[in-house]
Amino acid sequence: MKYRRFGKTELKMPVLTCGGMRFQQAWKDLPASEVTPENQENLEKVVRRAIELGINHFETARGYGSSEIQLGKALKKFPREEIILQSKVAPSANPAEFEKNLKTTFKRLDIEYLDLFAIHGISNNREWYENGLRCLPVAEKFQKEGRIRCIGFSGHGKNEFKLAAIKTGAFSFINMHYYYVQQAEFESVVVAGAYDMGILIISPNDKGGHLHTPTEKMRGLTAPLTPMQFNDLFCLVRPEVHTLSIGAKAPEDFDEHVKAVEQIDRAREIALPIAGKLDAEIEKVFGEGWLNNYRKGLSGYEKNFNKINIRDILRLYTYAKGLDMVEYGKARYKLMSPDCPWVPGSKAENFTGADLADNLKDSPFAGRIPDMLREAHQMLKPTEQE
View 1 (cartoon, one colour):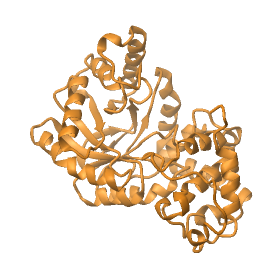
View 2 (cartoon, helix red, strand yellow; view 1 turned 90 degrees about the horizontal axis):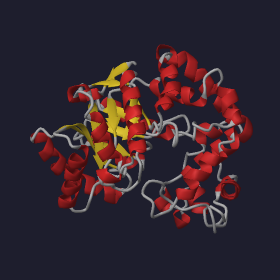
View 3 (cartoon, rainbow, N blue to C red; view 1 turned 180 degrees about the vertical axis):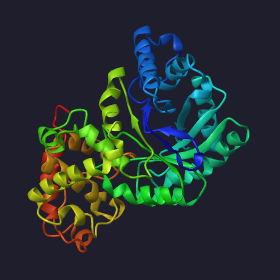
View 4 (tube, helix red, strand yellow; view 1 turned 90 degrees about the vertical axis):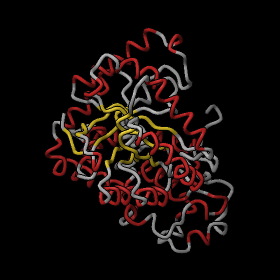
């Protein structure tokens, strides 16, 4: 395993993290008595394999159902001082409720302290951001008591709120999206790096493009690496990026990523030419200049007709049509809703070109985008069975 200094936390962080979002038994809290021996045994095999590989950072959340109680039990079998443990709690309008949830995290993990604690989803939207800052003193109180060592946040929404949270200077690390298929997040990577924050990339396999089930086109273009290995190295090329969260469901789920880590010293010379090949394929489909310019002049979804999330729909459409990543696009598009803080905005339906005229007036592709949005909707919309 390779390690990087995790920003101003000063922790020695493995470049792969064991994420606790996929190995738990249920997405709801369970009492320990309802966890099956089979599921717990598998989770403990995942933990043991991670530690054998030198992955000593485990990351879970209050919102991950039975993950905390199961992970806490598994980690009892290893020296606590050799483990870097992180959990996350979503902000609340009521700090007392946030504190109650945080105490539940400590109880279910059965621990005295967390090495890392993140306010979960603080940048989803303005309400979450403001609630996060309202709850921050609770986390700081726990930190003064020695129960939390470093405070950070997870950022899922707009760069606007991620950047605002970073610039408060109150946080020592960030969990965030940034991958080949989501490079618009790069600004937050750079600014977080300038603030010497630890940077953990979340869900590089799933939200990074369903790379656990890659398309044949992706396989061909990233060879001799697998798409997952390429994406690992693409992210780790950036010195500001310290670790990638691998949501392992079985012990062997780490293997492909470990092979990528073996080549980390050559990440730039290996990954960047592959990225160039992928870019060229997309430009062949969409025309020269599309990748670098399709977001220009587009406002956030809140300002668009019917709150259509034009920027993110075009992103999903770009990779679906350019690299055959249709199933990935469908999975994300299905979740898109003005009421969903994780995938916000409306789908591209029930609009005319005139409806979007003001939203597209500054776009170099204003004449093409309405038809693209209609095609994207037909390509990505859920079927009746879904």
